[in-house]
Image 1 (tube, helix red, strand yellow):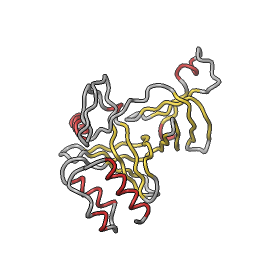
Image 2 (cartoon, helix red, strand yellow):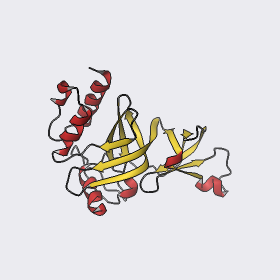
Image 3 (cartoon, one colour):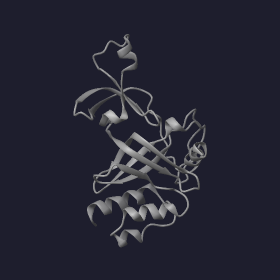
Amino acid sequence: MRFLFLLLMAAFSPLLGLAQTDFVPGTYELADGTKGTGLLSYENGAKATLLLKDLKADPTTKAGKKGQEFPAGKVRSFTVAGDHYVMLHSVKLDSGMPFSTMSLKNNFGKVLLDGKLELTEFDLTEMLHTSHSRDQFGSNNSPRQAVNSKAYLLRRQGEDEAFSIPVVGKKYREVLTSFLAGRPDLIKKVGSKPTTQEDLLDLIKAYNAGQ
């Protein structure tokens, strides 16, 4: 069932890009309040981890080569290349197809929009290994050894659980309209399937702005 889920997510829900495998300069905040800067890299999945290299570490030493590992549960947030990531306590993934649900604990999501509703991108790269895929809006990705597939997640301000927006079937409208409850004007704009990324962003922006 897990394999079927991953196939469905690969086929229907990726937002494509390059997997982060290199260390890049960034800032971080740990769950205990510790803040700092360094060279950062991260992985999502069952063993989601933030990797940190001290900028002053000798690159020939173990610490300089591999960096220090922080399980996602010990990380509050980090920022790299202008992108801000937060730790998601609970991630509920669902493509909308039968038998395509999965729950994960303590993973990272890139914040796209903040406010009453938080919209994040969730990286599925560590769980998907395929050479080709199509994103949920119909764009092709050139063949790669590993495809960086991402799904949209929504969560309400102050809540731990983040839910993916299904991209096929009736669940797309059901999930999205449940988050837009109280805004019948916006619910009217939600179709039965995804249209464009911009339309989704505009809906969440309008909800957060109360417009």
